[in-house]
Amino acid sequence: MASTTSPHKHVPFIEEVREELSFNMTERERTLSTLAGAGLVGFGITQPSWRRWLYVLLGAGLLKRGITGHCDLYERLHLDPRHPAPSGVQD
Image 1 (cartoon, one colour):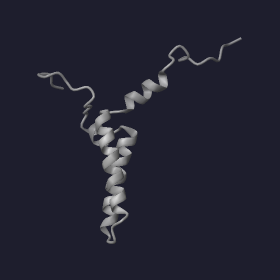
Image 2 (cartoon, helix red, strand yellow; image 1 turned 90 degrees about the vertical axis):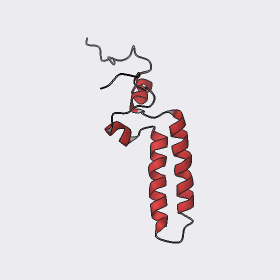
Image 3 (cartoon, rainbow, N blue to C red; image 1 turned 120 degrees about the vertical axis):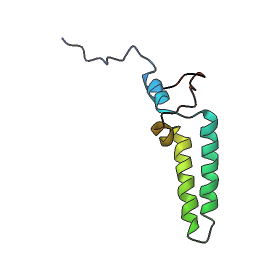
């Protein structure tokens, strides 16, 4: 009888590892992005003009960045502030 167990059953934290690899921001950046995003969304919804959408969209982008812990710009530039390259080392 063939076994149908998961090949990763001996890796208890595989989901945590997968999530950690998707992060490319420090905790401080995440917190600041989330707070700034919430502030901009809150400010934007109180504005009477068309500019409200500018604030709301910018705030939503910062909220997404803070909540997910993933910065698309960092990914495109191959940056990860959590693991800075040693001085003198170039890619």
